[in-house]
Image 1 (tube, helix red, strand yellow):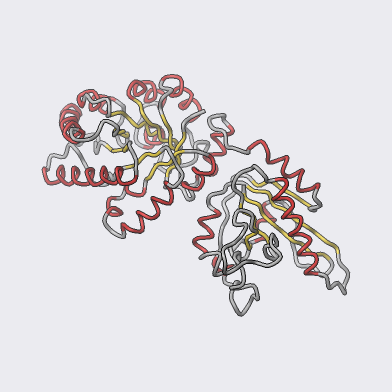
Image 2 (image 1 turned 60 degrees about the vertical axis):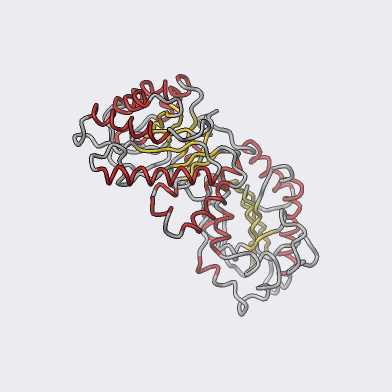
Length: 428
């Protein structure tokens, strides 16, 4: 198993890291402007991502920065930006910072660049505490030689390398990635995991590209078992699924999904389907139906607007989950049927039993359903919710298209006069 971090370039990174016990890599300040413009917002987002996460890495800004710059104004701007980033690592309680070399082939003489870079990094580290370290990442380097030279000439054990597999594997380099792994292993501290098709730096999931990521990871683990890793993809779900499938990580509760499906069916649900690599779309158009004129539940409980939070807040909550069990109750009715409320309550009573009996001990869950929460006979709103970890949230409040969800699970879902469908989704 690898010591995995999740990059904040991926939606829901903080919530997923907390859920599965992974570390996190703060990438939002890779763009230096975020340290200046609207900083309170970025600070709030960063603290939210870091909350409850123990292992942390910080990615420093890099655009237009060059530690070995010929122009002293550029060199000074680089120093100031990196010092600013260092202060943020202290502010956020992070001890490792990833930096770029700023090297471009055919622009600089490699030996000169390495010497000048080492002078910069020695000066930068001079007043930094012993518990702080730098990780120098490869970007446009054609081979590991210049980075190894910079590390050797800097001569500080707090200065290691960060091997970016996607950058090394065809996006910017023609050197085989396994060669990168073998040559950098002695001073390798961290690894960025993503893939591409040798044309662009697209940060695909590790299974989507021409790089044999499995072989690279196995070689790194064998040569440098102390290295840590970051999944650096915009969509973290397929990356986590691939890493688990290949045996590099284990996500808590993975083996219990089929048992949950069986448990749901035994409780009387018509259908129960596990959904993996789930990425919910929270649509504003559907949330718009939750309004005082269109719904009598609006403003009366904790699971409907406005108490449930904005659509952005709901989407942020859902982004912390990448798997779920879709539950369906289907009932045949006659033309004069009038027991709609009773059916809805029966469906949600089963859902309550499923949450209480089947999901106990599973960890954090998020239940979404129609018909409202029935864990309490009467909602305590506006007083604090008495069962916040168990309450059933509204699918409509989250802007979830139930039809699309059922289509993905190959479940029938339609509005018919002789058949009624009730649907719930329990995120795990």
